[in-house]
Length: 394
Image (cartoon, rainbow, N blue to C red):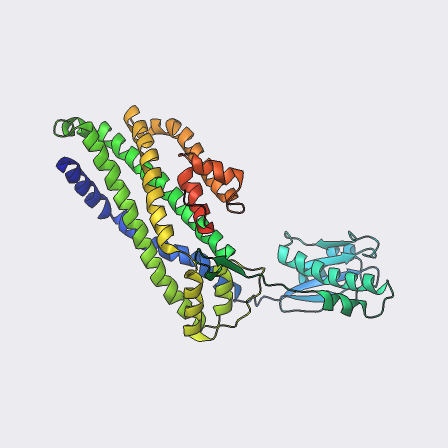
């Protein structure tokens, strides 16, 4: 047992002091938070470029529809589209909108011409303006007094709260969206750790076998001790990296919420963190302290002790299973090139487990999620999606 401990200590030390490990450990939390905050920051930056769009209304019905906004300037042109394209005037416009028919009778009677591929932003802008106007005209055609106001008043925006009952009858506010996010993040992490760590074990075996070092080491230790030392050391390295990521992400998240809260983007940040674009935020967060309280209150809904505990359990179980398979591949080949063909079956199984976990997120108690939770090859990944939804302990 002492020899296994020596191997674990040496392998652990060699991997932790590598520059790649240190750089990746500190860089990943930054990249993870950048994925969340950078789109919010970029969305607040406006485009100052003036985009002029010519509108050729051959019907004469939609002259008042195209009002200028912050993104596009619409110019009504009383000319044929062919004449505009053949003259130098086309250089003055980014695109040309041509309305050839009454859209009430033919909804496909509008076309956008452009030298470049038309962007979705322009297409949606034109479609939304015309759709709103055509809908209003269609409502007026029913000759019902105040019909538009009646429809407007009948619209209701429901905000459905979710409450969990405790065993002792206590009630606690919960968030299905937050549970989904936590489950998906945990699933991606455990998938990544199992795959990367298993590949590390395989590469280590192949390298020592190729360099003939293993022949010397076997003279001092048993093959079982050598393999257990490698497997356990890589697992400890991955767990160390995970806890460092968790700690650094928490620190950076708290700092980012303060910056975003002070900058007036607190509401957008809260919406992005909750993944609730369809639900209107009902409270305006006021300042740094309020934003921090909102984020911490949202994160407190998750049973982090349970999530982290089971993450370690499922990681160890899944890692030992797949690491042994990767190690078997490493011992069966003579060089790293030959490992690719043997890795394909294992890679397919892991990818299937990942996709099963993704599809199980919407129905964590469905047949796919249940049976994949029973299969050892898919259980570690799928169960991480189900845990935030309070699956039965057994």
